Image (tube, rainbow, N blue to C red; front, side, top):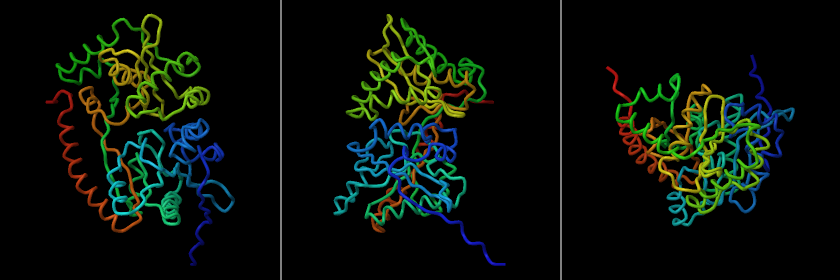
Length: 382
């Protein structure tokens, strides 16, 4: 029997997610992770948070079938720097440029400014997902780029990258796992006595003289967004030099995604003084932005970690992902978990050098993971 002809596929490089039909994109993305949805990615473009002058030029990878239907897509960007990625490749860039190469622009498959694991190859079929990787490689080779990178890739998609020959990289974040807790005290009961006392003391001190308000959906008012923007600017100015998101992005999140947003705002004497912004996924609460206008001990822990646990338990969510970095989360019941990225390096010699770097880094990271797992504050069973 003759083999069937392979399905017709057309690969292209789009000008932006906003130009793609929302329903077609979201049919591939699913509804579980709000950051890969059309609404979030498109508002980044329409608000000017990515695009001309930002170093993030939208270039989504698209695969269509013979009838012109979108069957696979990947959020991708041509990058002229390595900012806002949270997977650091500055050493690679420096090495390649010292060798006479041009590291930038590079192709980045990612959600901008968002260190949240999730699907990066949006496709119903594995063969179509693999076509996205071949499309990325073709973009690199045809345009004489140094490399392509996919960051914060959902673990279940990593075998596709490995099979395609991309280099794999592992990092560490800290996530809270909801093990069916009834409330925060039920969670505390799993910790050592010393840690229980510490966390209770921190929570009590953090909220002295404050009123904490949790708002979502239609309950979010203009004053909440004004306050959250002020908090975000303060944090951005201290951490990155300038905020990644524009003010318009916050307005658009409020207009288009308010049902996915949960704000925790701290008020003092009728004035908002600090706040945390979370996005709600199918089974996860994603902590994203935080800021404060006055220094209050432990308030950061309260709004971003402890209260997030409260909110996740109340909503029967499986976990809290509170962003990148933060070994201090370990003492607060957030466990170390692996996060993944994949890298296609065009030049064979440069690829060997990066592979050697990753092998040495992996050994150190595995030792760190083992050490962190031994530092968890949970009571020993038995």
